[in-house]
Length: 401
Ligand code: LMR
Image 1 (spheres, rainbow, N blue to C red):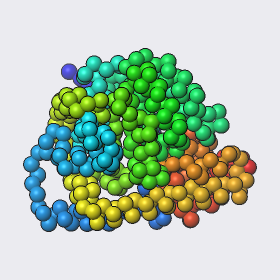
Image 2: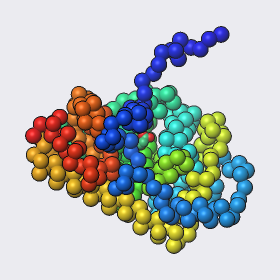
Image 3: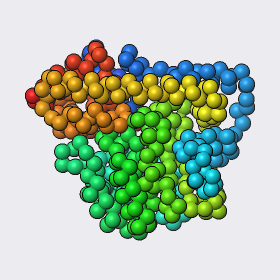
Image 4: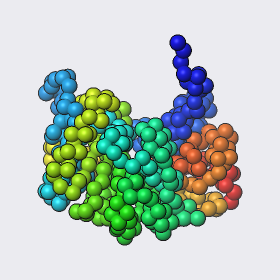
């Protein structure tokens, strides 16, 4: 017996996490990591949020048990997450027509969503934005979907191509799955406005499509509720959809792998039936979720004062990102770097897509030790007063000015 032939040919490194490995191995002292989407502060570190530390202290004092969690996670966590996604008085919550399961990170939620859909007879076609987070493509393909693309950006690469997106989605077959980024689109930072969300919701409903909202950055754009503005278009009585939440970013719990999948159905009975299938998808995949990260999130969300503290800390991260956006745009414009930079100022979340060629991104890395993803996706949080002038000089060198 031997391993399958293809396993003996090395696969390429991951387009995002692989860059972190290359960055770590880079001996140049002035290197700048703008690649992976992890929040860093002005000192370049990813601190544990004080509200998280306080929750951990409380958990330690309580000395719980390390017994298995239920397959779908702890009920209080599931309810707290549902209320964070929607608000307790939302019609979906009041009507009890959603179910939420705990998952290992947002990626775990996406995988459970994919398995759940395929195992319950979904169409095998999934539509992803072009561009999107590269792991979407890999994850849905390996789960068994055929991946198709809808256009996302206009020709200038700075604004949403609403017409192109809608007309492509109108061509999808009834029952096809559509992945949408709830806020802080990765990699572009370009989100639909409420009117566009309405138009998207109309097409999804009219064409009987199944939306999966990847909601990994709630609170990193304009605010916890502001970033949920997709609900204005999608949360309607006759549209069923899935929401994948991640708490890697907004609780800075990257290595705890904590997230959730919410399925919204038209009524409670359909939601309950969906839950029974979600449990099978989870049990077959990783059996039941890890506890610690979810315990932290639950502790914070269920305590008024601690939650207020967390929201303040989250607002500080958001504010720093927005400040960095403004500083970047000001510096690029002041240096006369060729390009249309002003729209980056008001885009949402950690990412800005500079719109570079693969060669330009390679030059940034090879000549200037500046790491970016794909066509120049940068993590705006990685900019500091110290590295910004060097980043702007390097961009002028590769993009012209
Ligand atoms: C990113 O896009 O950089 C983050 O979501 C981290 C990841 O897992 O790729």
